[in-house]
Image 1 (cartoon, rainbow, N blue to C red):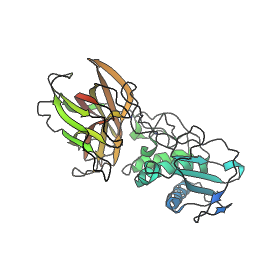
Image 2: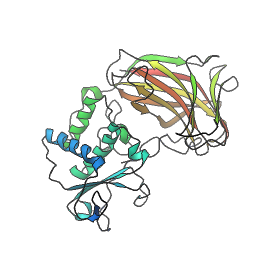
Image 3: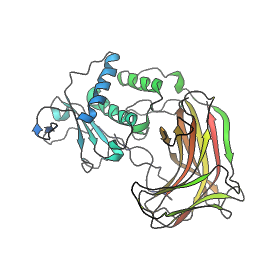
Image 4: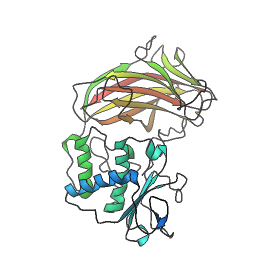
Length: 368
């Protein structure tokens, strides 16, 4: 499975999308199968690359605990070149059951930072366990959402989930449910997955003259010496609540992996486990964002002093016009664990063209 690109498509401003590219179990092809051993020599024996062995062992153990012994199924688990994309399919992983009628299952993972080396351990598990669902259990993709908005299955399609984030390191109950569901598609909906209702408003920020709590930041790629292509200001000309808005201006020399954002941190406690956070903001751009996008992001942290989020949420595709060229953008962080100590709201822009993006009227609500 795969992630399609990180941010939501907003047709008039952006060119990418925040849903994940989901890998697909493809029909058996006509190509000859040649598995490779660890030395890279052709062999007819299925092999498991050393980086995947622990994930395979964990999956076999989890299924055995649930009464299903999959250890006798021959399987090959291997890396493939990022340029190897069958047909028009873009993916990070593929799972085949009975690959080319050989009686052997097969999983392919794209060998790239985006698809594997840059992922956390739990993100890798999400990805490869989905592929094991295809390759070892012969499961196809499953559509649908639980009442709280999470995908019904680890086997969800690209229209229903972000493949790397079905569950995170703090969601043992959710992980257990998704592994149970792999063997029982008629499993009962768990209590934590019930419909969430409005509980409280955590912030209603109309942006003040001092932009209290907001911090501007440019994120550069590693080992770069490039100039900062982003500038940040508190604007008094474009707004939805007079007389101020946050602005990010980008110049055409912006590198492909350089981003500008305003962010604001919130400490959080005394909320129900698996609650939902909903953030909304108004935005406007003076120009289309060439090779770029904008987004409203919610990052979750397990420590108030941490700068490394354990989960990230992006805006949905839908926007609502609110007048004067502004649109309303929404992000939902579904089922935040009670280990969450801090969340960060990011107003995020990337562009290689000259443009200014304005943000105003942020609202953050809790749903328990």
